[in-house]
Amino acid sequence: MTTHDSVTPPALPDVSGLVVGVLGGTGDQGRGLALRLAKAGQQVVIGSRTAERAEAAAAEIGLGVRGADNADCARQSDIVIVAVPWDGHAATLSALREELAGKIVVDCVNPLGFDKQGAYALKPEEGSAAQQAAALLPDSRVTAAFHHLSAVLLQDESIERIDTDVLVLGEDREATELVQALAARIPGMRGIFAGRLRNAHQVESLVANLISVNRRYKAHAGIRITDV
Amino acid sequence: MTTHDSVTPPALPDVSGLVVGVLGGTGDQGRGLALRLAKAGQQVVIGSRTAERAEAAAAEIGLGVRGADNADCARQSDIVIVAVPWDGHAATLSALREELAGKIVVDCVNPLGFDKQGAYALKPEEGSAAQQAAALLPDSRVTAAFHHLSAVLLQDESIERIDTDVLVLGEDREATELVQALAARIPGMRGIFAGRLRNAHQVESLVANLISVNRRYKAHAGIRITDV
Image 1: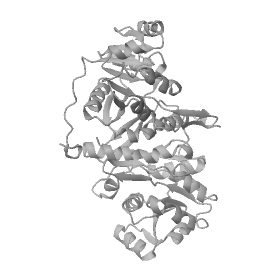
Image 2 (image 1 turned 90 degrees about the horizontal axis):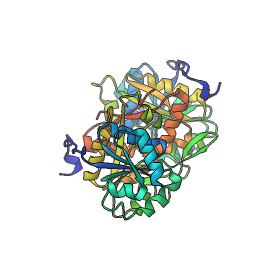
Image 3 (image 1 turned 60 degrees about the vertical axis):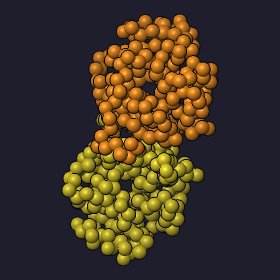
Image 4 (image 1 turned 120 degrees about the vertical axis):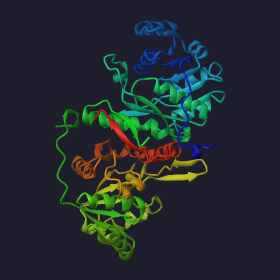
């Protein structure tokens, strides 16, 4: 069956037993994702440059979250979310090529620049952060997702539900469906397949527009896909 | 007041008396927009290369829609939607520089390429179709909007409401608010300010992702901004 034939997409796989690593898990976005996934019952390992920082962030979250240095985090995990700053993206991933071999990698990095007029899209040489990850990690199953989540909402424990869709991109259908299923573990979220990695740049860059929305409307804007 | 201070954006202006031109109004997107705006009570002029083709498309819609060649369409209109194919974008706008002077121009063109793997973003030299329009029309008030509407839904008269948001971009706040108000005339739609023209490329290109969504889910996908 090709994608063209699938009128009703098959039920998403059960990912409840998979261990999720979060590289850059001590940053706002990574910590927020770790918290939400742990609350949903997922086993989570936070990765950071030093095990100590990762363990401290994990202890703060509780919920059984563990901390480890990035290499250990990658080794221990089935699905590895990359939530590092764009600045450190290439160096971090290059160093983890072996540890990430065979793993599902979920890039959620948004390469943005900022000036007085706000945020704007940077143009990675490879086309996007996700394509850079795919180029640096030829033995991993690279996907892209979780770009548009507000770190503020993710970290606010008084908020139970975050009503937004997670656009999931990738070449490997089994991998993208696992990531869609992972997104759907968080109350209010759906994982929506949204194309191949060559179309990741605009998904990453759209965060610049959401920042403009947030400024104008004093919001924590997210995205919903209609008619799906 | 700067944009940073506007917790509640002011009420949008009344655009019910403005004449809306649609360049490329004989194409699917243009015809669909002309129909929806006319149904909403807006005066609409369809533009095409020849007045005859434009008049025929206008007659098919009815609702008082008029047809004219592109230059006449531009002259008669207060707000001019550019819904021409990307191929003809630069040539069409260059030829209308005088007629479009002082007008609000709404670019809704999505520069996309297609191959066996589906759609992908083209990279206009100016950054985006909207920035190309701004470069070619220095005397116009160029905005970008209406990128993500399904031409199928727009043209299906059995559908009363199209639940989706219209992202509106531009430098000129008065112009973007008029375009937001125009979008809000169509039942189910909101016009949401989403940044400056330098952030138009990803909004235009996101259509490639929506095409992937449509294929996978057999949908006519649109976008909603959450928390606004």
